[in-house]
Image (cartoon, rainbow, N blue to C red; front, side):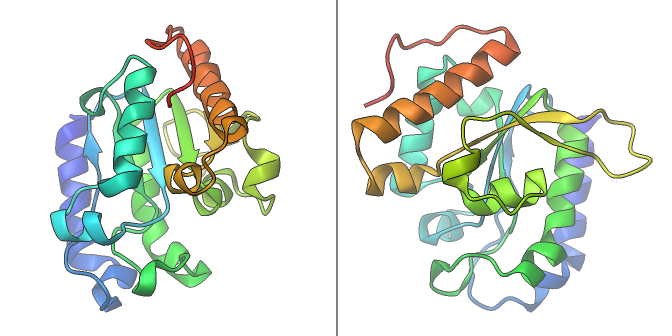
Amino acid sequence: DRARRLSEIDARHAAACPHCLAATGHTRLVFGEGAAHAELMFVGEAPGDAEDRMGRPFLGAAGEKLDEMIKAMGLSREKVYIASILKSRTPDDRTPMPEEVAACGPFLMEQILAVRPKVIVTLGGPAAKWICGTDVGISRIRGTWQQWTPPAGADCPAIPVMPTYHPSYVLRTYTKQVRMEVWSDLRAVLAKLGLSPAAPAQPR
């Protein structure tokens, strides 16, 4: 049962994650949420202030933008799964350090293996680099199909990955070009899943 497995991973992470147990800049852990049998999984880098206060991924302005993106795809939070590489907020919301990713990231790997989505969408550079195992910047890799390769021995096939911009970047760089690029990425994901978008044009 995938939901039960996710619950077990959540409990084990809270009790044993070497990064989150040592971290001091957070209030709550943010494990992830959504459908345990989701075909689509979104992965960010780390919780921010709103997520830290509520214990849920992608809230605040960035969360509202992600919700808008998901809705334009004809989906909802309840039908996808959302998680981050780190489960605890970083000091001053800085980019996760390599050692933090190495310590907390394996629990995200377990989440992916539990959910077994058909497609993963990475949001922002850090998530794309870790999931895809690359050092290529997000501006070069976004919009191109990559893949997540499961660890040796895992009973799970490689999963297609679509890297796209983080919703926070979309809000900071609110140009027609950026919005069109993100919408193009999401439409490619829908095509891969055999679905049609709910919106005829890119989200506002």
